[in-house]
Image 1 (cartoon, rainbow, N blue to C red):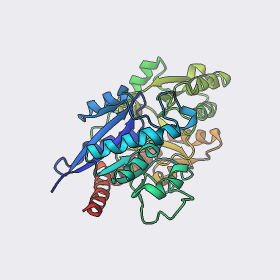
Image 2 (image 1 turned 90 degrees about the horizontal axis):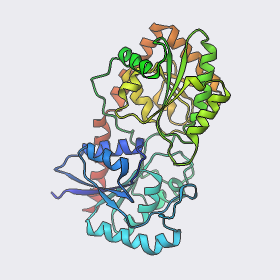
Image 3 (image 1 turned 90 degrees about the vertical axis):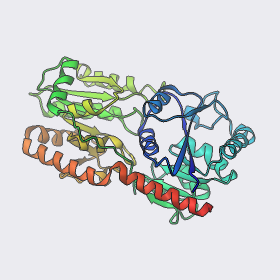
Image 4 (image 1 turned 60 degrees about the vertical axis):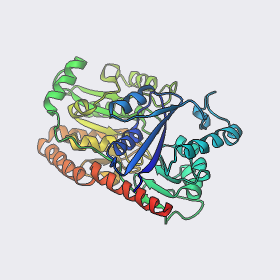
Length: 390
């Protein structure tokens, strides 16, 4: 039986997000006797290329063809719509045929838009792995027409107004998590963070993990930190933002710093940058605050729950699919930053509740979101599509 050749394109560069972690975790765990993954990075390798290499995977850099991009992030290196159709699409079709690709599996908006048409013209099966909100235009217009399968990270993300029915091709496959049984000592990690920051060891450390973009609302996180500090005046409270801006020049990092200054939090907000591995830092904070709106299904909250770090998240997007309020974490009003204060205070002041929440969350995520479950569900889709090619 010949191997199934699967193509995974990404945009190279500095950004390493949840979609990369999920897709590459899948790729690394494919059965090499059955599947042959081909990874390509557009434009450059950058930090993403280094990350892929560290995982023991190989890739190639595609300087051409040029890809398309939304207006807000378009650069001179991107193709115009006409140029994409006249030059890039034929180049992509030739690439897929030359490499004898059976399935194209895309994992983010730019790759969906760039590779969906070439995949169909080349006679490949096409998987649109949907990680955006239900109103995403591409998922409602292009995917129903060109995708052989639409995989989604949550029920929330299901395209809300598809141009035609997707009932025969839509499927929820949760993001994969490789749960390391060797969990860092949370007390030691907390102490290490306090030492790094030069703050008292009894400080309440609240974290934001992830890229800085409008959907995740890092500025709202700053307001939540202020609310917790006001609710706990006898304890030093610090907000730690782990991550980089998603779009260079967006100014969201500076917006967080400026908002902290407005709220009198300048000495209580810390821009921590990107951490790899994230576990020691994530295990060392007292709580993870998820301030996002329309988050399809965030990786960080599952990772934190596995580590025993309590999670307080907005009751929005896919968060309610991951958290049972009051049992495995807390869900709060997405519009009111002050709503984070009471759950954090209760967790800090009630050790029995904190332990119960942490243990329930650990048990829940380990039973639902293991990497083996994700690989089994995704490869079942590969096999189904391969059967259609026979």
